[in-house]
Image 1 (cartoon, helix red, strand yellow):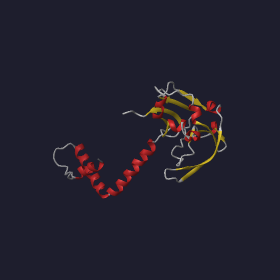
Image 2 (image 1 turned 45 degrees about the vertical axis):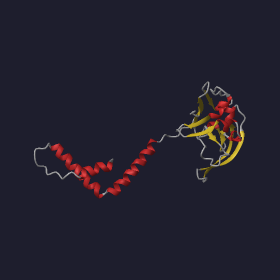
Image 3 (image 1 turned 180 degrees about the vertical axis):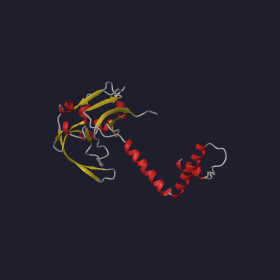
Image 4 (image 1 turned 180 degrees about the horizontal axis):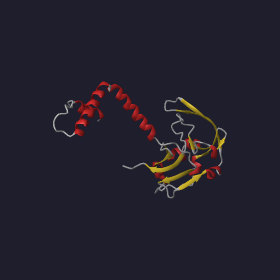
Length: 215
């Protein structure tokens, strides 16, 4: 659109300032003509500047990560629930140890150390899904959403009907820090994933139960 705009104004002839045109109109046309000449001379640099400007805008628009103190459970459930630190600490913690966090290419991006945590399925065990039949549960999935909008998904079967569910944790201790002192709480990790960073969720804020749409 910007390119088309400048192409249009570049076709404007340089004003001669003759006739009875309004002074402001003549000045505006003169400015547009000068801008057009400058753009044609510096087009490559202008394009690069435009790219940098867009990238800067994206950076500003991105939501800041906020640590969370409570986890909301909602969606296709019979009753919404909210869990916080004291609720988590009532459940038995397990030693997770050190986990190398890898990106989508399998490249190491850091190590989460000295972790302990509680199983996500233990937190969710009392949640009743609004389903007409137990057979229908295989069509459900969980959307785990962080405070900055980042989302990952687990199927109901992954959490409650497979070995994966025995290794999906809410971290209650990391790097020697308790839950209340962790900067990235509430932290979700699935250490048996091949790419551990894909479902490594900092500042988990909510879990939404949903059902796959039927045809």
